[in-house]
Every structure is written in C-alpha cells, then in structure tokens.
Image 1 (cartoon, rainbow, N blue to C red):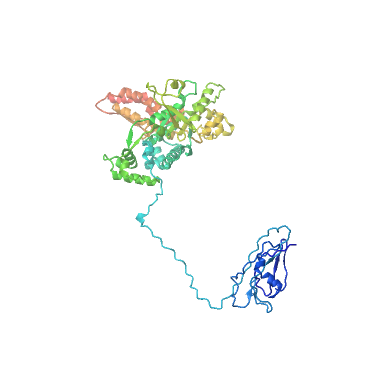
Image 2 (cartoon, rainbow, N blue to C red; image 1 turned 45 degrees about the vertical axis):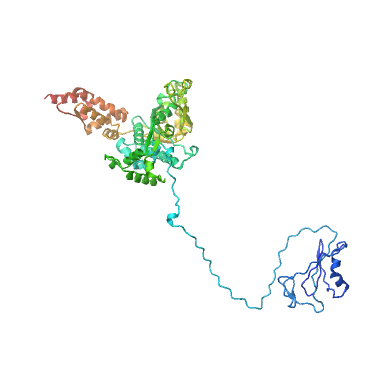
Length: 607
C-alpha cells in the first residue's frame, strides 16, 4: 500500500488524532501527537519537505483557518467537530496547524456515496445581555396613487355596435324590433287574435321558432360570428288535413315579420327533378334572392323611425315625425335590451346610409314550401308513375336545406335573366352569385292524405284518430314508408300536427273579419260597392259551417259556400236601386234556399 499525506489541518480535540482516509475504507487511528522537538514533529512541521513535488509521497499543506464557531485564541480550549467544549491536554501543546493525512491505496477509486447532511453546530452563548428587540409590527401597505374616477377608463361590458358597412336595411331593422317581436308569447297573442282560430300548438311553435331564428341572426351580427361557426337552423314541418289552416297560419306570421326578414312562398308541385320539364329546385333560392334585390341605399333615420313607430303605436297615429332626441333615446334603450353598446356618435349614426345586399339578406331569409306531400314517392296502388321524379326532387331539396352554396345567375347583357340550367349557362347567364343556405329557415307543410290512410289501416292505431286524422301518430319511419327519404326527414327535425277544425271553429273563422283572408269581410265590401248592405246572422253562419264540415273542406270551403249563397243577390240587386241602400240578411233559410230568400226580398222591394 502506497500512502500519501494529502493535507494537514488542526483537529480541535483534547488529543491530536490523525485521520487516515483510504479509497475503499475509512479508519481512524488513535495515537498521541508527537511532542515538540521529536523527529516526526520536525518532519511534519517542515514546509520545504512538504513542498517537494518529486517526492514519491507528496505532502500538501493547508494553512490553518479559525472556525466561525471556535473560541478566540485568548480563551482556553477548543470546540471539536461535534460541538463539544474541550481543553488541551497538559502534556500536549497546541499545534500551529491541523493535519489531515490521507492514505491512498493503489486500488480503484471508491464509488460515490450520497452526501451526508451537515452536522449541527452549537453556538456559544454570549456572556453579555442581548439588547432589547423592538416589537414586531404588521407592515403597512404602501399607498398607491389612485386616479380620480373620471380619469379611469371604463371598459364596456357589452360588444360594440356593429359597423354600418356590415349591415343592410333588413339586418339593421332586426336590431331594433318592436316589443311584439321580442317575446314568443306576445307574438303568438298578436297574430292568433287577428288572423286565425284554434291551432294554438302550431302557433306557439311558429312564434318560438321564428324568434329563435331572429335571435340567432342578431347574435351573429353583434358578435361577428364566422359563417362556419354559426348554428344551422331547425327546419319545421306542418302536417294536417286540407282546410285546417296550415297555409293561413304561416302566411300570417310571414306578413308580421316582413319588415324585418325577407321571405318567399313556393308551391313544390311546379318543381321537378334534373332533366325533367319544370322549374329547378334552385329557383326556390333564386325567388328569395329576387325579393331581396332592390337597389339604392336607405337612410338610417328612416329605418329607426319606422321601428320607433312600430314600438310606439300611439305616436304612429300622429302626423309629426319623432324628434332626434326621441330616436336617440329609443336607440339607447334598445341597445341596452339586446346587450350591445350604442353608437358613439348618435347624430352621425342617424344621418348615415346602409346599402342593400341581396346576397346577405337572402342568406338569412325564410322559405315556405307548401304541398310538400306531393313529392312523396309512395304509391298506394302499386303504380310507379312519377316515383323517379319525386325522389329526384327530394334529393335536390336535400341539397338546398342542408349547408350548401347555391349559385344564382344574374341577368346577362342581352337582358335575359340568368338561370341554372345547362342552356342558360351556354347562352351566357351572367356572373354567378353564391348564396349560403346554412341560416335560411325552411317551413314545409302538407296534407299527407296517403300517410293518413296508411296510419288508419294500422291495427295499433285503431280508435286513436281525432276527427278522422291520424297524422299526430306518425313517426319518422312512417314518413319513410310513405315515400320520403330518411335523409330528408332528418333535416326537418321539428314536426307538428294540426288538428281538423270543428263546426265551432269554422263558425268563429267565418266571423273573424280582422283577418286579411276573411271571406265575410270580402263579401261585405263587395256588396257595399253595389249599394247593398250584407248581414250574416248567427244561425246562418252555423249552417254554412256545418255544410263545410260535412264536405270535409275545412276553412277553405267557407269562401266557396258563402259565394254560392250570395251570387244571385249581387246579380239581381246590385246597382239597381241608386237612391237607397238595400239590406240583405243571410239566415238559415237563405243558406238552405238562396233562391227563395232572393224572391222574398224582391217582393218586399216591389211593394
């Protein structure tokens, strides 16, 4: 074993204990430190010997350094490595430096071992009393220089008002709707009280669906939602027997929303599949586009004034226009209601213009497709006539009602209106415009006579029909079995059945003169133009309603029944007596025998 003294340092102990560190083992040999004057003491204290680098056993010395926890040289004793207080041995004097002897063997170096935590050291207590420490006080926070309230910029909690270049007259009107177009219940009460009778369930559904469509469009405008992130619309299907009021209900709602939303009504029986004679289903979107295509810009003041008059009917009766202050207050209140910040400069906003954009307006419109049951491929008698064409129309409708881009051809230079057929493109149909159908609301309606007969024959449905109608029991599989594709019915998730009208419903409809489709009001005005005064009694209305109920023509037969009763009266009495007004009373006897009633009136006039 070859030993080498690596370093030397003081070991503060009563006895000088050299420490031998081996490469693979650590041992401690205890012997007395050599006295002064001995050869070993001289050897260890000889700096020249320790500095010889060529010696086989090299010595490296380190000047002794006083520990922080050791006592001053004037105080007797030292503190050992364990923190114990010791004194010098009487026979051994202090060494000028500490010594650490490392004995290295020729064996390989030791494996690294984890470091042990440092040993705790004991601090000698001071003999002097410590000065009194100040009491700990909580730190007072530093005051920040606060700006006055007027100088602090306030962040708006609502989005900014959309820029006018992104709006059209329709979309701007949609931001300022009247109160009746904000609540589905208010819209239902307003329309049902003046336009139709019964069918409360269908009216509730339509009012809720239309206002949900409005709210979705308004949200997209205010928040500038990208087209791919906009929620597709939920299309509607209305079913019911003929004359129950399907078309009248939908048209009444469309007339109510016409100032705010473009709409179109089409009859699907005039459309055909690709390659067949008839209109293309793409012309449905084209008709909506043409209704929105009106040139010129509209002043914002005019749009806000119209909205203000709809919201304030009492002021609409006055001839004077609302002041700028009234319009500004109306704009601020409406913006607060729809949760959007009002325009910053009200005067500039009212005097600005908005431009019409048929592409943008038609992409938010409403399309009502009537007689949808006529495109069914179901053949109850086993014939296949028209099945291929009907299925083709369904497939073309499917491409329209789902998210797609429909090309609309503008008018060509020769004045010919652009179309979508091959010949139109060959003749130069102009530049194409693509309209997205993602946010167009489609409303379908149909009588579905074949499906009603199919459901009536099912054993499980016996005795469950209402006034001969079984359409309320129809499921999606019943529509598929009666000629509609599964994909098409999947795009129309909302379906509602309208019940057949009773005799009382028909009588009430006959007296509903507030409706724009009232047949009685039409006849009263026609009689008035001939100098006649028409009066319909309660018993006469009951007789007409009973006749229509027996014929199963519903409300659609009221006009025909009333016209057959009154046609001879207008022919014989109209314009005959200019000096007086003739009263014509229609009671039960006149309805049953119109000729006898007319003869009685002529006899009274002859007298």
